Amino acid sequence: MGFRGWGSDLTEKRRSQEDASRLAHYDSLTGLSNRFQMSQSLEKVLAAHRIDQRACAVFLLDLDRFKQVNDTLGHPAGDALLTQVAQRLERTVDRQGLVGRLGGDEFQVIIPGQTPRDQLAVLARNVIEQLSHPYSIDGHRVVIGASIGIALAPGDGVTSEALIRNADLALYAAKDRGRGRHHFYAADLHSDAQERRQLEQDLRDALAHGELELHYQPVVHTATEQITGFEALIRWNHPVNGPMSPAKFIPVAEDAGLIAPIGEWALRTACHQLAKWPEHVRIAVNVSALQFANPALPAIVTQALAQAQVHPSRLELEITESVFLNEDEDTEAMFAALKRVGVRLALDDFGTGYSSLGYLKKAPFDKIKIDQSFVSGATQPGSRNGAIISSIVNLAEALGMETTAEGVETFDQLDLVRMLGCSHVQGYIYARAMTPDDASAHLAAGVGAVAMGPRSARAVRQTMLRKVLVEHGGDNYNATIRNISATGALIEGLANVPPGTIFQIIVGDGQIVTGTTRWCHEDRMGVEFAYTIDLDSAGRITPPANAAAAVPRLLKTG
Ligand code: C2E
Ligand code: MG
Ligand code: MG
Image 1 (cartoon, rainbow, N blue to C red):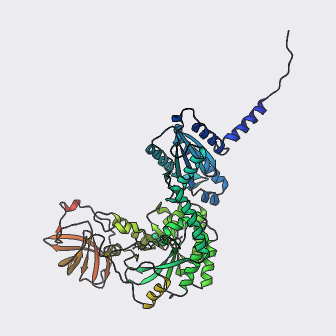
Image 2: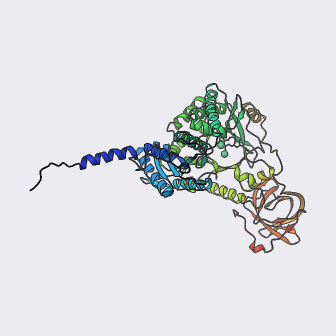
Image 3: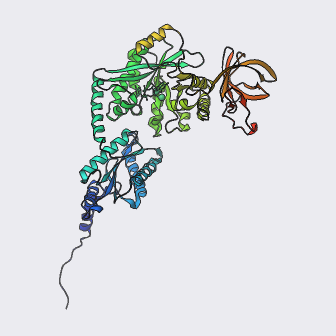
């Protein structure tokens, strides 16, 4: 017969219910599970009926340098970056686990089941690698990194609170050990975290009570052996643990927000010291990437110089490559602003970071400091460091920059960096960092720096007095080899030879070796061979089996 009833459209209501539930469980920016959903999923795994199904691994992941992107490029760019991170993360983890965003730049991955540690380590490394590839955000190239802490159930905890807390400690340890890495939870991390909190507090006190000091390490001009300046290096005598390395406490200061006041103090103290020293002496001060990102830096530098009344060109700021990780206008503007102040800029630890030659062209550096890791191995037989140093020197010369070889400890290394043309040397061979008074006394004595130290890290150079003939441009000269190694020789008897001059050295037995003069001082010169020669213990040279096929060494010719 028919029916009677009523109806209404529930679509909107349903949709908003779904929205509400989605909002409650998913992160609106990235679409990943949110903190609530992740914690429910973890609880579910840990409460599984069968004990053997309660095993799982928790990754806590934190982006390195995300804050810098957010601060410099703005929040919309930060959001775009997080979205891309989420996509890469999901793609990399794929079906192995559940990915969520806990908030900010913190992500979590739950991997159900018992997975061997080495397999988890592979996944963690893979995630870090994928997230570290450059991103393109609004036409900017952005590079960030990621650190991961890992805790396993049931070994590291059977409740979600314990697991998360321990993964968090592991994450902290990963960041502490230099970021861009993963770390598994271990019981001793609890005491590490406690120690770090204590260190932060002690550092705060040290700054407040004036317990930090600057010591000064001479920087020596290679050709004249005169001290051209000093690098200011911070020193802290910890009240309980004794002297502590800045390599250890500067990162703590950076994390605890203490690097700004410490950096400002260092600048003021160094300028104050400069005022007491002769005009020709400079001081270099290390500036952390966090200070460099602070728009107030040029004003802080200007003020320190003005208060001490020293000329800006006497102050050099040492910056590491990490300031280039985000290529944005702010970096360029900061360089320009510092140049307007009139200070010199040095690129510190060159070769250890994300060395890209692109920025050398744009950034107005006055000096490149070649990292000590290149110097320390350079005199070992077969090392390619010499070739690397030589090309850095050539590059710097072409760009009108000076070069300092860092960490020179032995005479061998000194000879080599001289031979390769580094304009300045800094290292224990001349002096360690010293108190301001000792540095003043050094300057007052007026003598040049005196090299003192072991002859070599390994005895590869042989001293000798061998008469040889040296041929250049059709003329023969008598000379004496004072010492020789597989890569070069110290030759006496020719004066005022321009560096770059190429010689044929007739060493007897009809052996001829080609070499290029790297430096010349009075009647002595350092010559670098065109290829690595074989020396026997008596200092005799064995010709390469096939001289034409001998591996040429990287040489600057002409
Ligand atoms: P850096 O700027 O590369 O400084 C050079 C480091 O090499 C110094 O270590 C110096 O003592 C050491 N060194 C110099 N010659 C030799 C050598 O012949 N052999 C060896 N093995 N080492 C040598 P230090 O003083 O422990 O400083 C470590 C790092 O801490 C510095 O590296 C710098 O990055 C940072 N740092 C030091 N002072 C400050 C500061 O005032 N502010 C900031 N932001 N960082 C600082
Ligand atoms: Mg430095
Ligand atoms: Mg350095």
